[in-house]
Image (cartoon, rainbow over all chains, first blue to last red; front, top):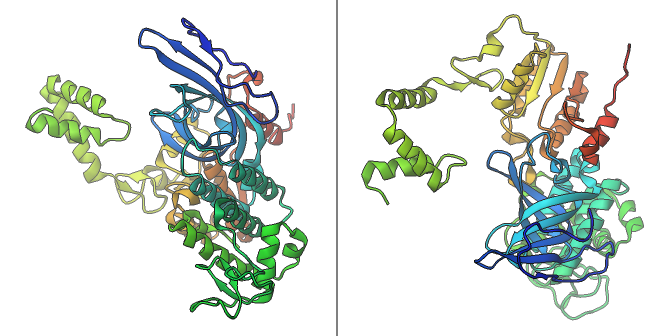
Amino acid sequence: MSRTARVKSTTAPVRVHGCVPAAAAAATAVLSVRYGTMGTTMSLFRDDGIVLRTQKIGEADRIITFLTRQHGKVRAVARGVRRTKSKFGARLEPFSHVDIQFFSRGSELVGRTLPLCTQVETIAPYGARIVDDYTRYTAGTAMLETAERFAENEGQPAVQQYLLLVGGLRTLADGTHQSHLVLDAFLLRSLAVNGYGASFTDCARCGLPGPNRFFSLQAGGVLCGDCRVPGSAVPSPETLVLLGALLSGDWQTADACEPRYWREGSGLVAAYLQWHLERGIRSMRYVEK
Amino acid sequence: MYEGVVQDLIDELGRLPGVGPKSAQRIAFHILQADPVDVRRLAFALQQVKEKVRFCSVCGNVAESEQCRVCLDPRRDLAVICVVEESKDVVAIERTREFRGRYHVLGGAISPIEGVGPDDLRIRELMTRLADGTVTELILATDPNLEGEATATYLARLCKPMGLKVTRLASGLPVGGDLEYADEVTLGRAFEGRRLLDV
């Protein structure tokens, strides 16, 4: 797919929206053309993103929800992708990392009507390797749903969340670490990039250097004996070490941890996530551990 | 807004999947202008489908009696079960005239993001059918998309201890297409599932 897009109807001057170097990062709006007597604008946008979810519409179409690098969450219509002879249906499956060209009726990608997916190229098809293992698949869907929830405002860039998801899916697909550990690491880091980072060593209230024993969801992490609040949990020190390792990316420590600490840590992460998101993540119920 | 029964008809038609308000209006006016005999036949068919059609107690396919046509057919091979997502898939496979075994309709595919887990499908019923040892092969014919693949992976894992032969429908290039237009995922699958030409 070439970086410069063509639009058929060109009765008026062509405006180039943004001129972004042809790097791995995809461009923003490539071209927008005003046409006809009503002065309607059509725009082509180019971005790369992860397919979060697909919904069937009509006979053979789908609405695809992407988390894109430049535009955050984007919902777009992919026509005819459910037909077996579709040219890019297979590329628009959840977990796929793709380079997409959108066609939008307006100067913005996210407007009153949904844009269309006109071209799709695969960057990395993580889906095939994730779906081969059911445990990995359930962890992956929880990651997709969490990413969608954090990037709720369509069209608002969420670059850190996007990069985190790409990295998370790559790690999950590689299968080098236990899938539930990858999920917990992704959840903790998603919370952190969205401003809900938990502290697992220093006291979340007074900053007393750790290790501290008491864990409180409301306080945002561990608390010292002086700051502890009623109802604080007292997880094992190894669990707190594991959670700290997952947050910082210390995989050596995380992989060496015993299963009972994984389970305790997963419970704390799920509760902490639900506390901040207010509504639970539906696919978390199905995650196999 | 139209008056009384015309608007009621438009509203009811508009509740059907894929029918918007404009289409509902068009269908309603077509019915108004149609021959009364045709309309009565349509009404009768709608009534009959709700009264007579139920789900087969064995496979979950649509049936007009306790069991569906396929399950009642004595010429069918009892040793093979083909697992599909919907009754529509049974019709699609029957059109091929290749399969002589029986079916099992799951009623969907596992999709955690939509809140559909293994317990929401007819997996328990499938396990009951497999328990008596008559079945020797299970063909997983779920859709070739991510949810279908995940469902197939789950079922394959579940059936592994039973010592059954579990197979998955091949996926690859569509017949009548050009290789150069195939996407890399489909082409990759076609390579993976290539077969020996024994001529």
